[in-house]
Structures are given as C-alpha cells and as structure tokens.
Amino acid sequence: MAESQLFQAAPLRRAIEAVVTAGGSAPREAQIVAENLVTANLTGHDSHGIGMIPRYVASLREGGLAPNQHPTIKFDGGALIALDGQAGYGQVIGLEAMEIGIGRAKQHGVCVMALSNAHHLCRIGQWAEQAVAAGLVSLHFVNVISRSIVAPFGGTDARFGTNPVTIGIPLKGQPPFILDMATSGVAQGKIRVAHNKGEAVAPGLLLDDTGRPTTDPRYGVIQPFGALTTFGLHKGYGLAVAAELLGGALTGGGTWHTEDRSKMRVLNGMFSVLIDPQKLGTAPAFAEEAAAFIDWVKRSPPAEGVERVRIAGDPEREMRARREREGIAVDVTTWNEIGAAAESLGKARGEIDALARGV
Image (tube, rainbow, N blue to C red; front, side):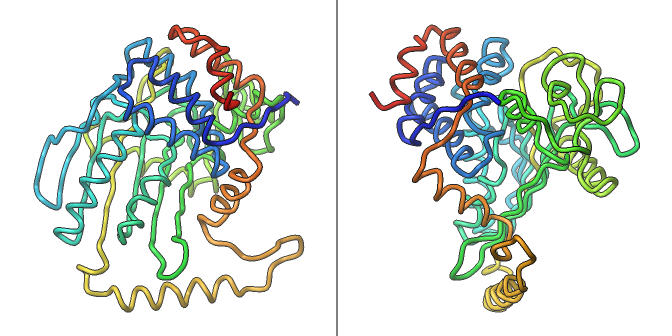
C-alpha cells in the first residue's frame, strides 16, 4: 500500500489554486476549481478531488479544456433553457448554470435545464446542494464524453461512462437528502485511487481486458483497459442508459459511440429539473411529511455492526467534519502526479509542496 501524507484543507486549496492559475485561469476561476476539488476530498469523494488535477492539466494542454469560460444560452424558453458549457471548467460552468436554473425555478416554479459541453462537472452532489440551499428539489442526469469505461449488463467491454444520477431534497430543520451516485458499481476515480494506493478493488466491480471479473485496479487505469460493471445488474444499467439519453442526447451534447480512447478531455452533459415547493403549493405538507418520513426511517433499530440508520448525504457530512478536523490524506503517487502536472505548466513542485503545507 502506498504511503500517504496529511494536508489541511485551506493550504491544500491554495496549492491547487496555484496549479490551476498556472494553466491560465483567472483568480476567481482558480479559486472556484480548487474549492470544489478540495471539498470533494473533504466529503470523502477522493475520486473527484485533487487527484483530478493531472487529468485536467493533460486536457488543458491537449486543448480539450478551455479556461475562463462561462455557460452561454442556446435556447431560452423561460422555464425551459438550454446552455452550452464551452468546454470550460465544470466547477465554474456548473456553478453558473445552476445559478441560472435556480433563478428560473424561483420565477416559474420549475426549471428544466439542458447543459451540454461542460468539462468535468466533478461531484454532481455539489449542484444538488446548491439547489437545496435555495429551497429547491433537484434531479440531475449526467453523461460522460471521455474514454468509455463501463460495460452494459450482459456485455464484456466498455461502452459508456459512469453516468451519475443525483437527487437533492431539502428537509426542514435538518440537513438535506443528497443522493449522488454513479450508475457503475464504483466511480472510475475510486479505481484510480485504489491503483495509486496499491489496493485491490472489491469483487464484482471490474472486468479485465478479456471481460473476466478481476480485483486488479490496473485494468481501469493502464492499458489494456477492462471495464467497470453497473450497480444492481440491469437496474444500474437502465439508469446509465437513461442518463446517456437525457444528459447526452437530449441536451445536445452528444452520446458516446466511438472506439477512440485517445483524448484526455472529460466532457459532461447534464439534464436537470429544479422544482420550487413554494410555487407548487405543497410546501407545508411537503415539509411536514418529508420530516416525518425521514424520522420514521431513521428510527429503525440498527443492524449488528451499524451505529445508526443514515440517509443519503449523512456519510459525506460526517466525513467532512472528520477531515476538517484531522486533515486530508493524499497518497504519495497522487501527490507526485500533481507535482508533475504543475511542473508541466512551469510551476515548481517545491512551491506547490510549500503551499500545501502552509509554509
């Protein structure tokens, strides 16, 4: 197992911000990207955290990621809107697209938003969190235009991406319900993390390059590539196809149907529905019934070895509290990859190390 080192969130953000700035991003964009990535680490989603920086830098140098972009409106129907992300950093595109969608939902009661051509939108749960903070319910279906990495149920090779589905529901007087899941059994980034740490993955999550089950994460990271499997057999597969058709085809961003695995860019399409319970007229009943149901569920006697019953979003909140207190562990392999990416942009590795350590 690879060694790890601990970083506190604030200096780590400054280090990542410096790398993004070296890639040509304006200060605001660099700050937003760094904040988003470190937050992913804080919530326990290392797969979507700072370990993405080497991929972003490779995409930037290749021309597949364009710094300092903002979403443009392709169609404006009031409560129905289509946006183009201009291949810009998904952290900025996602934030600004959601600001537009939230404004429309507050105005009309609902917003159906089609976002295409955004570079990696990172942890989709962040966009649901943005919606519920405004008192809205949100649903998100996302596809991935990148190297195909997930096999269809009954298939033996990769045909699409991890295609996340996310649902955010505000709960009165308590933290929100945030269901944020890949339709694969595990996110691709978790395979990268396992590989960098020298760990095996759990059985049933990965196929090798011949389509046989394996626990060796190399088949998700190093050629010859294998494929991830969908969660829940045909159920995850069905949701993955729905995310591809909604997030890719319906948004106009396109679907994955090519053997070309050479490009480093990661483009996302996101189909979102935002609903304002106040405008719907059910807000009082919604608040009361939602709270009563969550309380009912959580009062189920915990199974052996389980501390308490949780809802989606609780594990991330608990992990964030712990990592803000104890620090974020980053394995040496990942940190070296980030250092190499910084150097490729003309930023000294020693400077990044010093920033991350707060010295």
